[in-house]
Image (cartoon, rainbow, N blue to C red):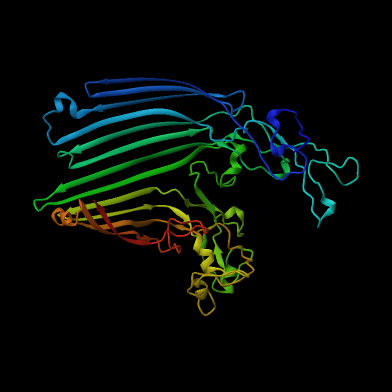
Length: 490
């Protein structure tokens, strides 16, 4: 490479020269300066507390706000070790704990706070010789050959006020154990508030090139809880079993949205995302299929409407289906996540089951389009054979067409559906050979087992995708598998 714009070792990267380029390369870096302190207190195995504070400075942020201060405090009280609690024999563990802390996020590029320029030398194309060396290079000599001198173009707008994203969290919890730890569990509640979220929002092309900028944007509140409960027991017949269940709830709400980052989130001027989750889906509400011309005439004016086409609700009542008729359809963040595990041992046999699922979630159905629509030179799913026709008016699949005048690929609850499910993720049954028999084969132990993964899923009837966790058309469903094995120790 030759003709570097700056004769500086820091600038001598392979992609910065202007000669014939057969390879590329770049370099970047950042600095982080931190101070850290911690105090810890414990008394009588009953009272526990700690306090930490750190001050971090990062070169990734603007010159006006490179530093952030992040304190944290935790405390615990082991109640079952108190003198007044020693006679409560059926309680084997009882601990209250709580904490508050602030953490910072600097997960952005090393040059996010700076205005950036780069040379764009352009490319030559035999098919379009008039476009040769387009970009920031210019043929000052008018000879249309050779190495051209180049200027620079702005590719990013700097922000000297860019600062740390901060998350403040309060957590309160309790751990407990009863009947000599036969019944154990915990409960946690948290409230997490994130402010000054780092984001590079999209901008209108009319603003001009190189105007994209990293900003501190929205504020978000995350609240939720998690409950875990486990019970184990051994019967007189030497049957030992353990049952463990967990359930958690999580809610995500945007509480503040500066105007300069609003374009990065769904919604419109009449439907603010404030008060909704950042994972909310914004679109149209489908209301069945037009059955005849009379229904089309009686409905609000909808471009592309015809018998067999999807009908959309006129939510604002103005008699026209347009962008003003969009609404919040749900959120891709589950409100409830749960799981259940069962383990049983009886003599030489052991059985284990594990399943989990989610509830109250809206997901994109990746199989819906493939299974209900057609396109030129593209395969389609078997659902197209039951599409709407004048003789098959009970179908929920619109009439087949390659024109799509009704814009049926738009975001709507035709594609975004209830994604609640429960999966049996793992099941195993095993048998351990008695030691007396294993020793005859010169073995310390021998175990035979059969296990299965992703055996079945119970899901919403509106979700046509086989795997409710795969909401991307390009991702394959997790296969069901069965394994037969032997564990031998010599």
